[in-house]
Amino acid sequence: MRVLLLYNKAPFPLKDGGAIAVNSMASGLAAAGVSVRLFALNPSRNYIAPEAIPAEMQQRLQLSLHPLNTDLAPHKALFNLLEGSPFHISRFFQPHIAADLQQLLQTEKFDLIQLEAPFVGLYLPLLRKFSKAPVVLRAHNVEYLIWQRLAAGCRNPLKAWYLRLQARRLQIFETKLWQEVNGIAAISEIDAQYIRQFTSKPVINLPTGLELSQYPALQRAAMRTDRLGFLGSMDWQPNQEAVRWFVQAIWPQLQAEFPSTSVTFAGKNFPANLRQLASNQLVMQGEVADATAFMQQHPIFIVPMRSGSGIRIKLLEAMALGLPIISTSLGAEGLPVEDGKHLLLADDAASFTKALQHLQKDEDFAFNLGQNGRQLIESQFNRAQLTHQLTAFYTALRT
Image (cartoon, rainbow, N blue to C red; front, side, top):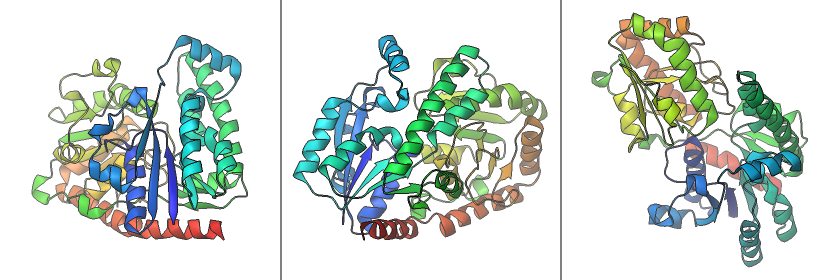
Protein backbone atom coordinates (compact mmCIF):
# COMPACT_ATOMS: atom_id res chain seq x y z
CA MET A 1 0.00 0.00 0.00
CA ARG A 2 1.23 3.50 -0.88
CA VAL A 3 0.09 6.31 1.43
CA LEU A 4 0.55 10.03 0.88
CA LEU A 5 0.58 12.18 4.02
CA LEU A 6 0.03 15.94 3.86
CA TYR A 7 1.25 17.96 6.85
CA ASN A 8 1.31 21.71 7.39
CA LYS A 9 4.87 21.82 8.78
CA ALA A 10 8.09 19.85 8.93
CA PRO A 11 7.98 16.76 11.18
CA PHE A 12 11.22 17.80 12.87
CA PRO A 13 12.59 18.51 15.41
CA LEU A 14 10.61 16.09 17.56
CA LYS A 15 9.86 18.68 20.22
CA ASP A 16 6.18 19.45 19.69
CA GLY A 17 3.16 17.21 19.88
CA GLY A 18 2.23 17.46 16.23
CA ALA A 19 5.68 16.51 14.93
CA ILE A 20 5.90 13.63 17.40
CA ALA A 21 2.43 12.36 16.44
CA VAL A 22 3.07 12.53 12.69
CA ASN A 23 6.52 10.98 12.91
CA SER A 24 5.33 8.20 15.21
CA MET A 25 2.39 7.26 13.00
CA ALA A 26 4.39 7.49 9.75
CA SER A 27 7.22 5.44 11.25
CA GLY A 28 4.74 2.83 12.44
CA LEU A 29 3.27 2.57 8.95
CA ALA A 30 6.73 2.26 7.39
CA ALA A 31 7.67 -0.46 9.90
CA ALA A 32 4.49 -2.33 8.94
CA GLY A 33 5.54 -2.39 5.29
CA VAL A 34 3.49 0.57 4.06
CA SER A 35 5.21 2.87 1.56
CA VAL A 36 4.90 6.34 3.10
CA ARG A 37 5.35 9.60 1.20
CA LEU A 38 5.25 12.72 3.39
CA PHE A 39 4.50 15.99 1.60
CA ALA A 40 5.21 18.64 4.24
CA LEU A 41 4.80 22.38 4.09
CA ASN A 42 7.67 24.40 5.54
CA PRO A 43 6.12 27.66 6.80
CA SER A 44 8.38 30.64 7.37
CA ARG A 45 7.21 30.93 10.98
CA ASN A 46 8.54 27.45 11.81
CA TYR A 47 11.02 27.06 8.96
CA ILE A 48 13.36 24.07 9.15
CA ALA A 49 16.39 23.88 6.87
CA PRO A 50 16.16 20.61 4.91
CA GLU A 51 19.75 19.72 5.81
CA ALA A 52 18.81 19.88 9.51
CA ILE A 53 16.51 16.88 9.13
CA PRO A 54 18.30 13.53 9.56
CA ALA A 55 18.89 11.75 6.27
CA GLU A 56 17.48 8.55 7.74
CA MET A 57 14.16 10.29 8.49
CA GLN A 58 14.00 11.87 5.05
CA GLN A 59 14.54 8.49 3.41
CA ARG A 60 12.19 6.53 5.70
CA LEU A 61 9.34 9.00 5.17
CA GLN A 62 10.18 9.90 1.53
CA LEU A 63 9.98 13.45 2.79
CA SER A 64 9.64 16.51 0.61
CA LEU A 65 9.55 20.03 2.10
CA HIS A 66 7.71 22.90 0.42
CA PRO A 67 8.49 26.42 1.74
CA LEU A 68 5.73 29.00 2.08
CA ASN A 69 5.45 32.45 3.60
CA THR A 70 3.12 32.53 6.62
CA ASP A 71 4.47 35.73 8.17
CA LEU A 72 1.73 37.82 9.71
CA ALA A 73 1.05 41.15 8.01
CA PRO A 74 -1.68 43.75 8.67
CA HIS A 75 -2.91 43.74 5.06
CA LYS A 76 -3.25 39.94 5.11
CA ALA A 77 -5.24 40.03 8.33
CA LEU A 78 -7.49 42.79 6.96
CA PHE A 79 -8.07 40.93 3.69
CA ASN A 80 -8.93 37.78 5.65
CA LEU A 81 -11.52 39.65 7.73
CA LEU A 82 -13.23 40.75 4.52
CA GLU A 83 -12.72 37.49 2.63
CA GLY A 84 -14.38 35.29 5.24
CA SER A 85 -12.26 32.13 5.51
CA PRO A 86 -10.59 31.04 8.77
CA PHE A 87 -7.21 32.77 8.84
CA HIS A 88 -5.44 29.82 10.46
CA ILE A 89 -6.44 27.67 7.48
CA SER A 90 -6.17 30.07 4.55
CA ARG A 91 -2.55 31.05 5.22
CA PHE A 92 -1.44 27.47 4.44
CA PHE A 93 -2.89 27.51 0.92
CA GLN A 94 -0.60 29.03 -1.70
CA PRO A 95 -0.59 28.48 -5.48
CA HIS A 96 2.98 27.23 -5.74
CA ILE A 97 2.24 24.56 -3.12
CA ALA A 98 -0.84 23.51 -5.09
CA ALA A 99 1.33 23.26 -8.22
CA ASP A 100 3.89 21.08 -6.42
CA LEU A 101 1.14 18.82 -5.11
CA GLN A 102 -0.51 18.56 -8.53
CA GLN A 103 2.78 17.55 -10.11
CA LEU A 104 3.27 14.85 -7.46
CA LEU A 105 -0.23 13.44 -8.00
CA GLN A 106 0.28 13.38 -11.77
CA THR A 107 3.63 11.64 -11.36
CA GLU A 108 2.91 9.09 -8.62
CA LYS A 109 -0.10 6.96 -7.74
CA PHE A 110 -1.28 6.49 -4.16
CA ASP A 111 -3.70 4.02 -2.60
CA LEU A 112 -4.71 6.41 0.17
CA ILE A 113 -4.13 10.06 1.10
CA GLN A 114 -4.15 11.36 4.66
CA LEU A 115 -4.51 14.96 5.76
CA GLU A 116 -2.66 15.66 8.98
CA ALA A 117 -5.09 18.12 10.62
CA PRO A 118 -7.47 20.49 8.77
CA PHE A 119 -4.76 23.05 7.98
CA VAL A 120 -4.15 21.31 4.65
CA GLY A 121 -7.88 20.79 4.04
CA LEU A 122 -8.06 23.50 1.35
CA TYR A 123 -6.08 21.15 -0.92
CA LEU A 124 -8.89 18.55 -0.88
CA PRO A 125 -10.49 19.70 -4.20
CA LEU A 126 -7.09 19.34 -5.89
CA LEU A 127 -6.64 15.86 -4.40
CA ARG A 128 -10.06 14.84 -5.70
CA LYS A 129 -9.26 16.18 -9.18
CA PHE A 130 -5.93 14.41 -9.62
CA SER A 131 -6.32 11.24 -7.53
CA LYS A 132 -8.97 8.57 -7.02
CA ALA A 133 -7.51 7.52 -3.65
CA PRO A 134 -9.72 7.73 -0.54
CA VAL A 135 -8.84 10.68 1.68
CA VAL A 136 -8.60 10.35 5.47
CA LEU A 137 -8.44 13.26 7.91
CA ARG A 138 -6.19 12.68 10.91
CA ALA A 139 -7.89 14.93 13.48
CA HIS A 140 -5.21 15.90 16.01
CA ASN A 141 -7.76 18.20 17.68
CA VAL A 142 -11.17 19.68 17.11
CA GLU A 143 -9.59 22.98 16.17
CA TYR A 144 -12.56 25.28 16.51
CA LEU A 145 -13.18 24.11 20.09
CA ILE A 146 -9.70 25.37 20.97
CA TRP A 147 -10.56 28.85 19.75
CA GLN A 148 -13.95 28.79 21.46
CA ARG A 149 -12.26 27.97 24.77
CA LEU A 150 -9.61 30.62 24.24
CA ALA A 151 -12.30 33.20 23.53
CA ALA A 152 -14.22 32.20 26.65
CA GLY A 153 -11.15 32.81 28.81
CA CYS A 154 -10.04 36.06 27.12
CA ARG A 155 -10.51 39.30 29.08
CA ASN A 156 -9.68 41.64 26.20
CA PRO A 157 -13.04 42.40 24.47
CA LEU A 158 -11.54 43.06 21.02
CA LYS A 159 -9.34 39.97 21.12
CA ALA A 160 -12.24 37.86 22.42
CA TRP A 161 -14.37 39.07 19.50
CA TYR A 162 -11.65 38.09 17.02
CA LEU A 163 -11.21 34.67 18.62
CA ARG A 164 -14.97 34.02 18.47
CA LEU A 165 -15.00 35.10 14.82
CA GLN A 166 -12.20 32.69 13.93
CA ALA A 167 -13.85 29.93 15.96
CA ARG A 168 -17.10 30.32 13.99
CA ARG A 169 -15.25 30.28 10.67
CA LEU A 170 -13.21 27.27 11.73
CA GLN A 171 -16.38 25.47 12.78
CA ILE A 172 -17.95 25.96 9.36
CA PHE A 173 -14.80 24.85 7.57
CA GLU A 174 -14.01 21.94 9.85
CA THR A 175 -17.48 20.39 9.94
CA LYS A 176 -17.70 20.66 6.13
CA LEU A 177 -14.34 18.92 5.83
CA TRP A 178 -15.57 16.08 8.08
CA GLN A 179 -18.41 15.51 5.62
CA GLU A 180 -16.21 15.61 2.51
CA VAL A 181 -13.36 13.24 3.41
CA ASN A 182 -13.82 9.47 3.20
CA GLY A 183 -12.97 8.80 6.82
CA ILE A 184 -11.62 10.39 10.00
CA ALA A 185 -9.05 9.10 12.50
CA ALA A 186 -9.60 11.11 15.70
CA ILE A 187 -6.91 11.29 18.34
CA SER A 188 -9.24 10.51 21.25
CA GLU A 189 -12.59 8.82 21.83
CA ILE A 190 -14.05 12.10 23.10
CA ASP A 191 -13.14 13.79 19.82
CA ALA A 192 -14.38 10.79 17.82
CA GLN A 193 -17.77 10.89 19.53
CA TYR A 194 -18.02 14.64 18.98
CA ILE A 195 -17.14 14.42 15.27
CA ARG A 196 -19.66 11.60 14.67
CA GLN A 197 -22.45 14.07 15.46
CA PHE A 198 -21.60 16.05 12.32
CA THR A 199 -20.85 13.39 9.70
CA SER A 200 -21.98 10.01 8.47
CA LYS A 201 -18.46 9.14 7.36
CA PRO A 202 -16.61 6.43 9.35
CA VAL A 203 -14.74 7.79 12.38
CA ILE A 204 -12.29 5.79 14.49
CA ASN A 205 -10.47 6.60 17.71
CA LEU A 206 -6.75 6.37 17.01
CA PRO A 207 -4.54 7.98 19.67
CA THR A 208 -0.85 8.62 19.12
CA GLY A 209 1.17 5.47 19.64
CA LEU A 210 4.57 5.43 21.31
CA GLU A 211 7.48 3.02 21.09
CA LEU A 212 8.13 2.40 24.80
CA SER A 213 11.74 1.33 24.20
CA GLN A 214 12.48 4.99 23.34
CA TYR A 215 11.39 6.16 26.80
CA PRO A 216 13.62 5.02 29.69
CA ALA A 217 11.57 4.64 32.86
CA LEU A 218 12.28 6.89 35.82
CA GLN A 219 14.23 5.08 38.54
CA ARG A 220 13.16 5.27 42.18
CA ALA A 221 16.48 6.84 43.21
CA ALA A 222 15.91 9.71 40.76
CA MET A 223 12.54 10.66 42.22
CA ARG A 224 12.46 14.29 43.39
CA THR A 225 9.11 15.79 44.27
CA ASP A 226 10.46 19.33 44.69
CA ARG A 227 11.18 19.85 40.98
CA LEU A 228 8.20 20.49 38.73
CA GLY A 229 8.36 20.90 34.98
CA PHE A 230 6.19 21.82 32.00
CA LEU A 231 7.23 21.27 28.39
CA GLY A 232 5.33 22.32 25.29
CA SER A 233 5.43 24.44 22.15
CA MET A 234 5.17 27.99 23.42
CA ASP A 235 3.86 29.40 20.14
CA TRP A 236 0.60 27.50 20.78
CA GLN A 237 -1.89 29.78 22.52
CA PRO A 238 -3.35 27.14 24.90
CA ASN A 239 0.17 26.55 26.27
CA GLN A 240 0.72 30.29 26.74
CA GLU A 241 -2.60 30.51 28.56
CA ALA A 242 -1.58 27.55 30.77
CA VAL A 243 1.65 29.28 31.83
CA ARG A 244 -0.11 32.53 32.69
CA TRP A 245 -2.86 30.80 34.65
CA PHE A 246 -0.38 28.71 36.63
CA VAL A 247 1.78 31.73 37.47
CA GLN A 248 -1.14 33.94 38.45
CA ALA A 249 -3.57 31.51 40.09
CA ILE A 250 -1.51 28.59 41.41
CA TRP A 251 2.11 29.57 41.93
CA PRO A 252 1.61 32.04 44.82
CA GLN A 253 -0.04 29.37 46.98
CA LEU A 254 2.44 26.67 45.97
CA GLN A 255 5.37 28.95 46.72
CA ALA A 256 3.99 29.82 50.15
CA GLU A 257 3.38 26.17 50.97
CA PHE A 258 6.56 24.75 49.41
CA PRO A 259 9.26 27.49 49.39
CA SER A 260 12.05 25.09 48.32
CA THR A 261 10.11 23.75 45.31
CA SER A 262 11.02 24.98 41.82
CA VAL A 263 8.92 25.03 38.65
CA THR A 264 10.47 25.23 35.18
CA PHE A 265 8.56 26.01 32.00
CA ALA A 266 10.26 25.07 28.75
CA GLY A 267 9.45 24.93 25.06
CA LYS A 268 10.36 26.35 21.68
CA ASN A 269 9.40 29.88 20.55
CA PHE A 270 9.04 31.17 24.11
CA PRO A 271 7.42 34.66 23.98
CA ALA A 272 9.28 37.48 25.70
CA ASN A 273 6.20 38.48 27.68
CA LEU A 274 6.14 35.04 29.30
CA ARG A 275 9.85 35.13 30.09
CA GLN A 276 9.16 38.26 32.11
CA LEU A 277 7.03 36.19 34.51
CA ALA A 278 10.11 34.41 35.86
CA SER A 279 10.98 34.89 39.53
CA ASN A 280 12.76 33.10 42.33
CA GLN A 281 12.17 29.33 41.93
CA LEU A 282 9.99 30.01 38.86
CA VAL A 283 12.10 29.45 35.73
CA MET A 284 11.19 30.29 32.11
CA GLN A 285 13.80 28.25 30.30
CA GLY A 286 12.73 28.34 26.67
CA GLU A 287 13.71 25.63 24.22
CA VAL A 288 15.60 22.57 25.46
CA ALA A 289 18.07 20.46 23.50
CA ASP A 290 16.84 17.13 24.90
CA ALA A 291 13.16 16.86 25.88
CA THR A 292 13.58 13.49 27.58
CA ALA A 293 16.50 14.71 29.69
CA PHE A 294 14.53 17.81 30.70
CA MET A 295 11.54 15.77 31.80
CA GLN A 296 13.72 13.36 33.77
CA GLN A 297 15.38 16.29 35.53
CA HIS A 298 11.96 17.66 36.54
CA PRO A 299 10.23 14.48 37.69
CA ILE A 300 6.86 16.04 38.58
CA PHE A 301 5.24 16.87 35.24
CA ILE A 302 2.47 19.48 35.34
CA VAL A 303 -0.25 20.09 32.74
CA PRO A 304 -2.14 23.26 33.78
CA MET A 305 -4.22 23.45 30.60
CA ARG A 306 -7.34 25.59 30.47
CA SER A 307 -8.11 25.29 26.75
CA GLY A 308 -7.28 23.02 23.85
CA SER A 309 -8.65 19.80 22.39
CA GLY A 310 -7.37 16.33 21.61
CA ILE A 311 -4.60 14.65 23.57
CA ARG A 312 -1.50 16.32 24.98
CA ILE A 313 1.37 14.33 23.44
CA LYS A 314 3.84 15.58 26.05
CA LEU A 315 1.56 14.15 28.75
CA LEU A 316 1.71 10.76 27.01
CA GLU A 317 5.50 11.03 26.87
CA ALA A 318 5.65 11.91 30.57
CA MET A 319 3.57 8.82 31.34
CA ALA A 320 5.83 6.70 29.12
CA LEU A 321 8.81 7.95 31.14
CA GLY A 322 7.09 6.91 34.36
CA LEU A 323 6.76 10.45 35.74
CA PRO A 324 4.13 11.37 38.32
CA ILE A 325 1.79 13.96 36.79
CA ILE A 326 -0.48 16.71 38.08
CA SER A 327 -2.93 17.83 35.41
CA THR A 328 -6.15 19.75 35.07
CA SER A 329 -9.15 17.70 34.01
CA LEU A 330 -9.04 19.35 30.59
CA GLY A 331 -5.31 18.63 30.28
CA ALA A 332 -6.03 14.90 30.63
CA GLU A 333 -9.15 15.06 28.45
CA GLY A 334 -9.51 12.11 26.10
CA LEU A 335 -7.22 9.81 28.07
CA PRO A 336 -8.46 6.65 29.84
CA VAL A 337 -6.85 7.73 33.12
CA GLU A 338 -8.03 7.37 36.71
CA ASP A 339 -7.39 10.12 39.23
CA GLY A 340 -5.12 8.81 41.97
CA LYS A 341 -4.01 5.79 39.94
CA HIS A 342 -2.37 7.10 36.75
CA LEU A 343 -2.03 10.79 37.69
CA LEU A 344 -3.49 13.44 39.96
CA LEU A 345 -6.16 15.86 38.73
CA ALA A 346 -6.21 19.44 40.00
CA ASP A 347 -8.29 22.29 38.61
CA ASP A 348 -7.47 25.11 41.04
CA ALA A 349 -4.73 26.35 43.34
CA ALA A 350 -6.02 24.44 46.37
CA SER A 351 -6.17 21.19 44.43
CA PHE A 352 -2.67 21.66 42.97
CA THR A 353 -1.32 22.36 46.45
CA LYS A 354 -3.04 19.30 47.87
CA ALA A 355 -1.77 17.10 45.01
CA LEU A 356 1.82 18.26 45.40
CA GLN A 357 1.57 17.84 49.16
CA HIS A 358 0.48 14.22 48.62
CA LEU A 359 3.47 13.55 46.34
CA GLN A 360 5.99 15.20 48.66
CA LYS A 361 4.75 13.39 51.74
CA ASP A 362 4.74 9.98 50.04
CA GLU A 363 7.46 9.51 47.41
CA ASP A 364 6.62 5.82 47.09
CA PHE A 365 3.10 6.80 46.05
CA ALA A 366 4.57 9.31 43.59
CA PHE A 367 6.82 6.66 42.06
CA ASN A 368 4.00 4.10 41.81
CA LEU A 369 1.75 6.70 40.20
CA GLY A 370 4.33 7.12 37.45
CA GLN A 371 4.71 3.37 37.01
CA ASN A 372 0.96 2.96 36.59
CA GLY A 373 0.99 5.64 33.91
CA ARG A 374 3.78 3.85 32.05
CA GLN A 375 1.82 0.59 32.16
CA LEU A 376 -1.19 2.38 30.67
CA ILE A 377 0.94 3.59 27.74
CA GLU A 378 2.21 0.06 27.19
CA SER A 379 -1.27 -1.45 27.13
CA GLN A 380 -3.30 1.19 25.26
CA PHE A 381 -0.86 3.40 23.35
CA ASN A 382 1.35 0.75 21.77
CA ARG A 383 2.43 1.99 18.35
CA ALA A 384 2.44 -1.40 16.64
CA GLN A 385 -1.12 -2.20 17.78
CA LEU A 386 -2.43 1.20 16.73
CA THR A 387 -0.70 0.93 13.34
CA HIS A 388 -2.55 -2.34 12.75
CA GLN A 389 -5.86 -0.61 13.53
CA LEU A 390 -5.05 2.21 11.13
CA THR A 391 -4.09 -0.06 8.22
CA ALA A 392 -7.30 -2.06 8.77
CA PHE A 393 -9.23 1.23 8.58
CA TYR A 394 -7.44 2.07 5.33
CA THR A 395 -8.29 -1.32 3.85
CA ALA A 396 -11.98 -0.96 4.75
CA LEU A 397 -12.14 2.44 3.04
CA ARG A 398 -10.58 1.08 -0.15
CA THR A 399 -13.04 -1.82 -0.55
